[in-house]
Length: 145
Image 1: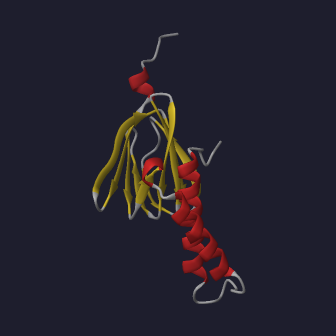
Image 2: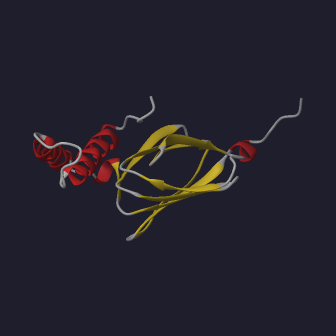
């Protein structure tokens, strides 16, 4: 059996926000929070385009686990590349943990007493998911470990 090079088993991950390029690295696997569920991408994946929801993008860079909290956006997957266009994104070092905890508490209070049909429910749920994603990314843990 022939050896396969690491280049054949890797893909480029690019994360872009309105402020510019946030990440441009080579990874073997990236896990993303899609609107239809979480999904992972490896080199050679079938191409597709989908929307992101609030959550954490998880990947390894040079053997070190990394995570980026995103609020929403789009993902384009090709066999060699994953391009994320995120409305907002924050790496572990950019997250104010105290602020994220307060945002989570506020979102939980907003959800109390609301039903799924209530006008403010979706917004409060998104705020809660965003705060939880920020706290998970700040912890350095993967959403998938």
